[in-house]
Image 1 (cartoon, one colour):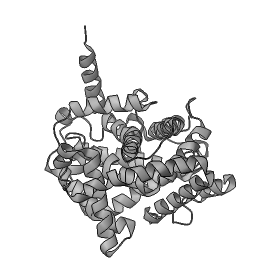
Image 2 (cartoon, rainbow, N blue to C red):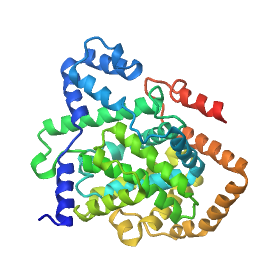
Image 3 (cartoon, rainbow, N blue to C red):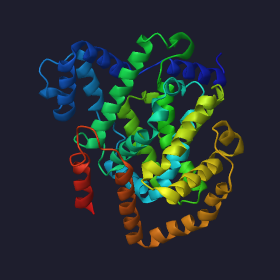
Image 4 (cartoon, rainbow, N blue to C red):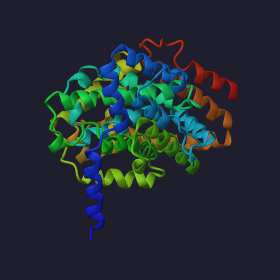
Length: 376
């Protein structure tokens, strides 16, 4: 008989060895087809698979999966999540940047693909801006509907991961037998949990009030995002409890983080002034605030693993917590304050997000912004 622990270990081993079959098959076909394949993907992304002449089976299968909207998707619920994320403003961005994302660095095996390149360290500013864009487009009202920018951006990122996975497996530097698949299902699901359940956890720990309905909505938003990103159905977490149980088991089965984790964390802190466009003393103050917040959220032992300095700024979250709790209560009794907070949050995310690709800043997000304006 398999024990509960053994069952979970077997499942983790299976998901560590599993990539993204639909995207991986499509990435292989697109590479073989060259520019014609990329044009087909782009056309299907924008106009639907029906607009593509004679598409390969892998393209049909990929879009059949992503065009299916699961029964549990409720746009009104996910729009509630959009409001909650935008209302969290700077504190939401700070928790995301210095806790949710760095949780991934603590996965000794899962973070190995990041450690194999200096790109994330040398390009930390751009990475931070692109992460901000992904979160912003995901969290716009209706941002994951078929014709929205968030939907298209999510699928482009999914295919980027598939191409990277294919390159690592074919490059002779990745030992799949020992390490499983690069960017495997287990770690795709972990990132989803970090962006949802652990983000909510981090906000609560600094005094942000999150109604139960908002928390449920945030979980559904990232559950659907994960569905589009190719996460296995067994790992689409419906509740915070499911997500936290999974990450607890995953961390317990991982080797401790190596020195690369501290390098990634240091690069993230160094990028804060540039990402927030705060020069001089204000940028340095924001950097120290992020360091203090990270130390507070991770705790002394885990912060030490990540090279987070122990400074007086670690007390800042404790000082602001009562103010955050009071602001949350005010937003409940004064809806205009909540709306103003959402608008400030949107401006913040737009300020730090990167729109330098070929889509152009004017086009990207325009559809979602129109929906925001139409609904007030």
